[in-house]
Image (cartoon, rainbow, N blue to C red; front, side, top):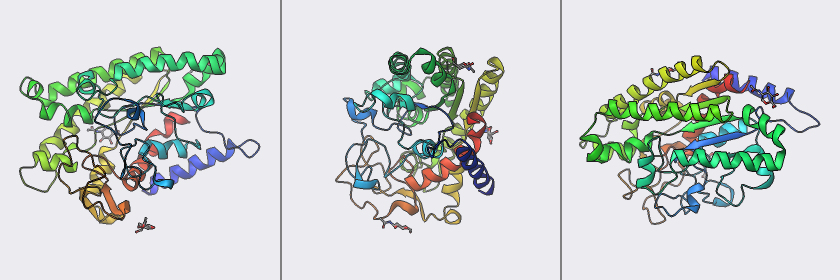
Length: 353
Ligand SMILES: *[C@@H]1O[C@H](CO)[C@@H](O)[C@H](O)[C@H]1NC(C)=O
Ligand SMILES: *[C@@H]1O[C@H](CO)[C@@H](O)[C@H](O)[C@H]1NC(C)=O
Ligand SMILES: *[C@@H]1O[C@H](CO)[C@@H](O)[C@H](O)[C@H]1NC(C)=O
């Protein structure tokens, strides 16, 4: 915690030094985001899918209580990160009508809830597969060049921060519940498959000009309220089998990031470890000001609906989510996202300086 605070101070200092004529300059020209519901800022609002969050009580703690499509009561960890980097408005959604004109200059968000590394996961939920998100990124590049001119577009593309956050849906909403997968391959083999797609994705992004890439680790999947309900055999503790799968995946992710880093010497790439801060919140919530780590604020602590989300009829939504680690059965609350974002910044500082 102390280390994080110190780094945030350093960051704030950079922001001050970057100030021209009273306007703080963001540390990077833009933020571009790919992945699943952990980072979707509303792309799914425009899709024909059941995995949406554009209705109450999602977004309850935003000013005007607007349900933007974020799977949270408020800000996502990446929103908080973008703010700390100096962006006044969050990186816009790409598919949304708002993502036009000058908004393109501060980035785009291609993420789609229900998506994953494995395109099959997205197809199951009518979400946007990662491979299609990369196609949208190509389109974005042409639009950007039209707005900014090709030379400025080039420096935006190579100076921007790219965030990839995926993998949890591949396991929770696909592998663990899909006999065609869990009966034909081990979690270790499935991880290898996902990691290989991740590696390809980075190689493609690099080919398209990306030079600063941060990728999130898997969270402790066994501590998600939905996972405890579905796979905990009646126990209320984290499911250790699932946490082992996360750790195994994360170890592979670390090794792959190291190898990508030596393969592309001018690429800055880092793992944002969300496993450690989230596990620590779940195992010792009180020490960090939280009171509830088992139940999501929204809902009953079991599987809320078939798609694991809350809805306007969810009973028992807690009055104040600030002391809840989880907002719904799978997604952290804004308060937990703040803790995760602090740790993300500490790990990502080399990417943006
Ligand atoms: C990024 O693009 C700018 C503008 O074309 C160029 O000057 C700079 O060398 C590029 N940087 C990298 C790391 O490719
Ligand atoms: C991955 O690397 C990070 C940072 O070096 C480390 O904190 C974490 O424990 C590693 N994770 C695994 C599962 O090896
Ligand atoms: C929730 O609780 C926190 C501290 O416990 C307090 O600062 C905040 O104002 C409360 N929010 C609402 C909406 O009551």
